[in-house]
Length: 453
Image (cartoon, rainbow, N blue to C red):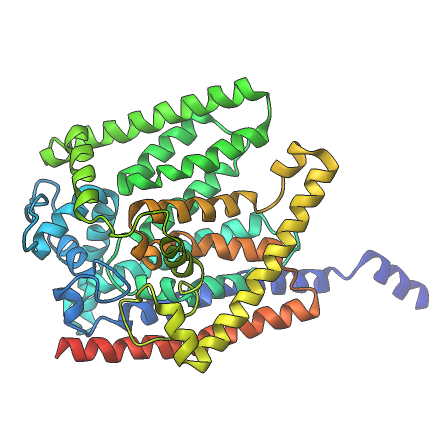
């Protein structure tokens, strides 16, 4: 018997091994249980307040009223207003602007709205409210894409579920997944692009075509080219090869974007590339911020809303103003504690990243530096800070929707949850995020209730 036992132990018990594999598989997919809960949470957080459908920028700088009209009434040939109107702009004027600048979201979101309407009618909810389910569904798609990225790039073999919870609970994720707004769909496209960049070998033509399609939804996401350039550098082959690949990708991205707009202009002439460029320049001047980009306050405003208030905030203004961090620290002990713990977690991850950069440089100089994990994520965060300052610095909280997934990935790659104190710190952060952001959403609901009359 001892000999038989010993042989069994050495060979392993197949039943036990299968059981462990099944348990491991379920643990890896535990995030799937979040999907119905998150859809219900997001779709109902702010759907009962009429002001959201009547006035833009009342919640986190979202253009929810304009997108509500766009998704409910979308047709390629249908003009919803005069996008050029500079005086007393109506919801329709702004909806037409968003149709031009964010056509992929308009197409996708309106289709999802039409599919969701019968479900709402069946359960006795006014079908028009199905517009609030669109971004809730987009958010869980983003969660799935983030799961794929976490599984593919996880050097410390961390459990991925906590980082999905981090993304789902982040304040900007919660807010913009709960109302019609194009930026969460931009996050979908950014996550898809990150997945594409992890394919080997890299095909410049494919990268360029994908980037061109992303630009149809948000032309300023051309900034993703910085990540493509970094991947071409990582692939090696010499400077000439990198420049050739970059040129091919750049030309094809512009051709794809311009070709897409030209095809769309058959239905609405506003999509014509020359009209699009002229209008985009005009609108940028129309909405230009008052402070120069060299003013330190501009960078402070953009940075805090991108990287701090996007995760936790606790203050009374549902618009999440530029002073949101200052108000949180001064007036909310809970918000101050949540902010402090989040900043400590971020600092731990940044220090680990800096050490990896140093080690990469010491071992192989430039090749070692370029191959450092999270360099692409750090580059994307820095690029979006520049884009926010360039476009409209007060909108950092809105633009953060494409940054928060990168932050979740950055944390996973630079924290080690197998280290007791790091695990305790990160789980404590998640607990505080849940409590604080729930309280913040309730404050927002109260403010919107007053505005709705």
